[in-house]
Image (tube, rainbow, N blue to C red; front, side, top):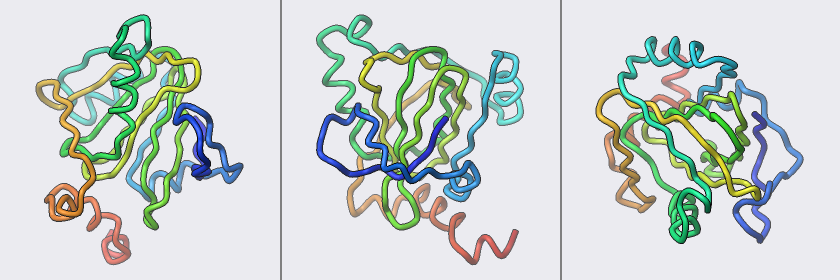
Amino acid sequence: MKAYWYDNAEGDQRLDHDSGKYLPTDYLEKLGVIYHRCPAISDVDTIANARSYKNRDEITVSPEKMGDMYEEKVHMFFNEHLHEDEEIRYILDGEGFFDVRSEQDQWVRIRLEKEDLIILPSGIFHRFTTDTKNYIKAMRLFKDEPKWTPLNRAPDLEENPHRKAYLQDRSPDAAMMT
């Protein structure tokens, strides 16, 4: 895993967009993003049990698996959105990027590779893309039945209860209470 400020340069979303300004794991934790290196599936199982994840599936994002729909799907995943559930992904093979919004609404790019596990809190604005190799295989974990419902960023989404809870958890006052 490597986290850094996204460079905002023009170009394909699958490029590194590496600003050279790297961020430590504890900065991601401030945003509510949790990272684990999991060399074995048993490590994933331990985390899943601790967080009450009951279901999982696997997805391969590649032109070979998705055919003509690949480009459309990769661009759809890159639309800024949030979920009302945690998003937990374990990378089984390949590489890709999750971009998350900082407190100042800037993009933080997180490069993930095989054996990386990431947990995004509900309510965080984010997006996903493969890298230039156009291939990633990931395990998706779910607390209940598998679902993936993106809510694309729009002004009225700031009133979403999951978004409001996310922002409350990140506020300086909330930090002083812990």
